[in-house]
Image (cartoon, rainbow over all chains, first blue to last red; front, side, top):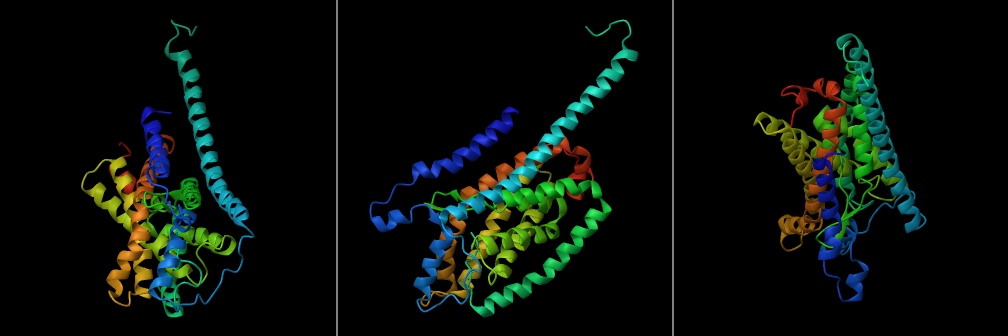
Length: 118
Length: 225
């Protein structure tokens, strides 16, 4: 991996982990329960304030049985994506390596007969 | 973060679905055409779809003390045009709406409009503009992915503000509120998405230089950074 790649990855890590350290933990219990909650849950609360009488008129067809099951499904979604990307990267690296080896051994013999490879 | 199931009034839900439908047809046609014309691009199309799958599953913490997730659709929009990302975003949104109770079927049209249509359109437009202005590849990719991501969540904020205007301040006050929840939270995430997209495009430039040359926005100036 090049230095540039490592620096980009480090930056992403910093941006992601940073807020966990910088954002002060709220002191009251209600705010603490929502600490790093989903933005959609916050939007739900905002809707409750703006339109107190609004009733959601449809509910999800299938609701994950628990938070654990929900994280399982999110992990599955990420794994599917990461799996395909990993397959592509692995294939690409192997292809590049194969392409580098074949011409090197093909060209070495006729081009430099006086200096055989050690 | 998508608009929750049942949280758009029926008229809005229907309206956004009607607005998104032609884009779905356009997207499916465009995807079919590009795969037929350039079958060698299937691998990169798959990687673009996988990138959207991966990124939209990652709920990341933000400076606002809440979590949201990137969209990952900017990459494919730059490579294959905005139309190609409509069906891909639809699959991601359906997966999350049906299995995860994240987003929803009634809000599918609205969410598709923000994540599958407007976001990719902005990414594509910014990328074209940046390349036209002679910006280097990495800078253009970063800006396009980052702004596309932000556009998605600004769109979500507008959609909610339109449906739920503030009783006193009207839609503008409501937009500020939802913008604070969605768009502000999204800024660091958009930066992350931009950086990750640059990483993937760098890898494509190294491993798939020939395929990139076959793509309109990458061929013009070659694939050097």
